[in-house]
Length: 125
Image 1 (cartoon, one colour):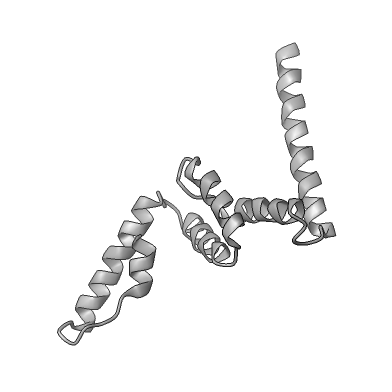
Image 2: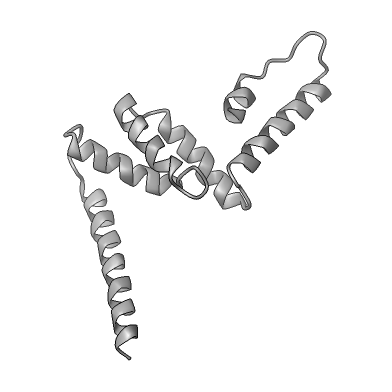
């Protein structure tokens, strides 16, 4: 909501540029507060994620939005979003997997396996 309003702001004849600037900052503040932004890296992730979503087809976008709705902040970092979108494309045969994607998937699974093994090893001590 805030992002759309921010992007749609148009200066009216009765409005000064100072007033318009104030309005833009207020909308941006609302957007960052609603998105629980606390650090610059979070803001960058949010902006890139929002831009990525503009490229998704309706089916992918619906799925991604449903996953995001369940997250703590209500949105996902850009690379997590991209990974979900890549999985959707591969599952729906919209694209062929490339080496980078497969590498990231293997890397993610390896990291998860290491975490599971660490947890199990810690309980054995």
